[in-house]
Amino acid sequence: MKKKKGIDILGVNILYFVVALLLLTVGSYVQYREIKSGLMITEYILVLLPAILYIKMKRESLREVLRFNSISIKHGFLIVCITILSYPVALFFNLIAMTILSTLGKLERPPIPTADSFQEYVVLMLIIAASAGICEEVFFRGLLMKGYERLGKENAIVLTAVLFGVFHFNLQNLLGPIVLGLIFGYLVCRTDSIFAGIVGHMTNNGLAVTLGFLLNMLNRKLAGGDFAMGQQGMPDALQLAAATVIVGMGAVLSGGVAYMLLRVIIKDTEGSQHSKEEERLMDEEANGEETGKHKISLVAFIPVFLTLALFFVVGYLQIRQIS
Image (tube, rainbow, N blue to C red; front, side):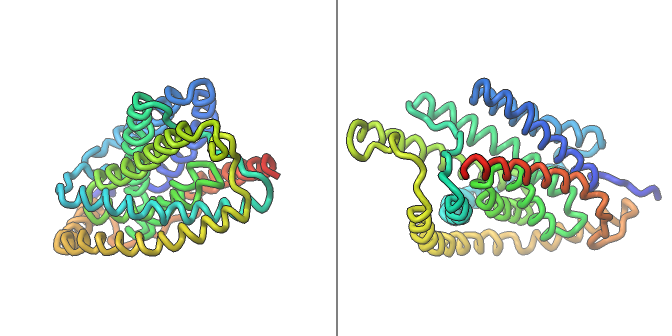
C-alpha cells in the first residue's frame, strides 16, 4: 500500500517560516498604517488563510486536521476558569523576562491597542480576543501541532508552544505565550477539539483587553491628579522585581486551583483518550506508516532555525532600543 505523507513536519515548518516573514514585513506595515485593520489583515490573511490553503493543498480533511470536534458546556466553562486562573502564571513569566530586560535599560510599553470607550472595547474584543483566538489556534494548535504529532503528543505540545511564543517576536512577551501555549495545547489534545484552544485563547486575550479598558477608565478618573497612570512610564527594575514576587505568589495559588480544575477534564476524558490513541495507531497502520514516534531529520527544522535567527535579530534590536 502506498504510504500517505499527509501533514508533514518539513511542510508545516516551511509554512511557519513563511508566515513569520509575512508577519514581520506585511504584518508590520499594515499594522503601522492602521493598527485595527492591520491586525485583522494579519490574523485572517497572513495567519489563517495560509493554514487553510496548505491543508486543502494536501487534500486533507479540515475537520480531522484541525480537530473540529465539539466540547461540552461543562468543559468549555472549566477551560474559561482554567485560563483566567492561569493568567497570573503567564504574567509571572513575562514579568521575569521584563525584570531582566529592565536591568539593561528603560523598557517601552508594548504597542498593544487599549480601549478608551465601550464601542472601542467591543471592537478590540472582536479583533484581539475573537479573531486572534480563532486564527492563531487554527494555525498553531490545529495545523502545526498536527504535523508535530509524528514526534509524539508531548513533544508536539511543547514544540508548538515554543513556536507560538517565538511568533510574537517580542522579548517582553515570550515566556507568557509559551506557558499559555502549553496549556492550550494540552487542552486541545485532551479534549481532541480545537475549540478548547479557541475558548482558552479568546478568554486570555479578552481578559487582557478588559483589564486594559478598566485601567484606562481608572486613569481617566484620576486624570490631572498625582496618580494619573498615563503620565508614567514603565516601572524600573526594582518595581518590576517587586511586582514579579507579588504576582508569583498569586500565581502559585491560582495555578494550583487551575490544576485542580484541569484534573476534572482529565478524569472526564480518560476513557476516550485510550480509544482515540488506538484509532490513531490503526490509521497509521492503514496508511503504511510505522506506529510510534517518528525519527525526523534535522533538515526538516531548518525553517525553524531560520525563524529563530529572525527572532534573535529582532530581540537584539529591541535590546539596543532600550539600552
